Image 1 (cartoon, chains in turn red, brown):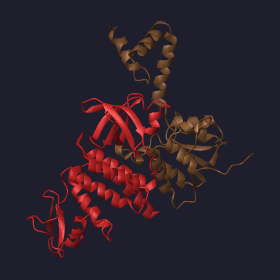
Image 2 (tube, each protein chain N blue to C red):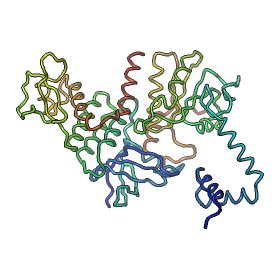
Image 3 (cartoon, each protein chain N blue to C red):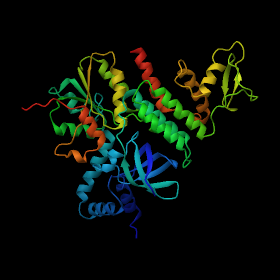
Image 4 (cartoon, each protein chain N blue to C red):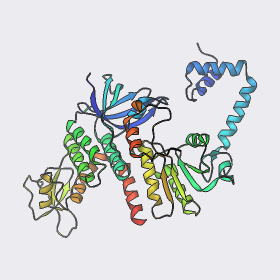
Amino acid sequence: MQPQPAFLLHKRPYRETSALVDLLTLDHGRIRAVAQGVQRPGSRSRSRLQPFTPLHLTWVGAGELKRLRLMESTGSAPMLAGEGLLCGFYANELLTRLLPLELPVAEVFAFYGAAMKELPLPGERAGALRRMEFALLEALDAEPVFCDLDGVELDPQTRYVYRADARRFSPLAPGHAGGLDGRTLKLLEQGDWAAPGLAAPARSLARAALTPLLGERPLRARELMQQLAARRRSG
Amino acid sequence: MSFSPLVDRLLESLRVLPGVGPKTAQRMALHLLEREREGGERLASVLAQALAEVGYCQRCRTLTEEELCGLCRSTRRDERLLCVVESPADMLAIEEAGGYSGQYFVLHGHLSPLDGIGPEDIGLDLLEARLAEDGVDEVILATNPTVEGEATAHYIATQLTGRQIRLSRLAYGVPMGGELEYVDGGTLSRAFNGRLPFSGE
């Protein structure tokens, strides 16, 4: 096979010198494989096979669990540190949890790759993650449809809440706080993430759409980010 | 062919050791049973005792059967320096390299959200309590240069905000006697960014 562009999502030790890895690949989506010998001290692939680094891989095996053959890193890894690193963990945890094995998701791969380049820059992080999240929602056929429950276009003046079960919006009952107004939702529909004031609504919409897919178990990377943010506020 | 049930159980048990497969386990078991019964008894009793008694040092969390390990009790070690490492093996490596005279804190792991390992699982609350006592001037972050090690370092740095404690991280560099051509790109670029003024002497 031709070497596939890929990213390492997760690696855990397997036996003594091998590792079980979850990878995001361009044409094959998420795959799971055994990387033999990478945990051996001094192994060259050990330092190569790191998360957030663009890789080129080949593997063998038709079953669910592949065996990695060739591993090469291409380009230099972005130096993720601090907040950007936690965002990277968040992206990896999200994809590991939600992507079924071997569902081709070229678009998610593209946005993930782009996000890895943008995460070192604080101003770009939120936008990069949102683009990846919405690509993921689309790939899973769970993206929000910007109209109300009856399929009617959203009214710019009305406030709406997202109904994940129907993937549509219903008007907020009068007297309730919160929700998103129709004008904001229209901007989100156009993918206009950079418009001022859109970061928070985009995040809450993405979260509302992702939560039912994630089920009960919370995302640990998000918890960690919240813990750190709380600490920084109190410190 | 198989031996008696007890011998088979011994073979099976020996295989919990790293690097020991069926063949090695058989060699070890036969050696103990046939040629080294005395040594085997010693091994069995020391192993049982160690498993029952060895725990974590209350101060630095390294392995010890005492309340405080030798390093923490020593008056020769500089209490103002604290080096945070991921494992007792890392601590030994630094000790063997020499040149460090401060104390340690052993995490026994690193932060890894995808494996569900959070700050409490690696004793970061204990570290914080230790740092709240006065007396530490500098914390040296010697977690591994992996993404998880980096995340752990970041968390500890956040714990330290607002305290008058210096924070440093081990430098990235080219290995001694190595050749640049064969150094991986990540290490090389970090070594480049962290280059130091050249001093002739």
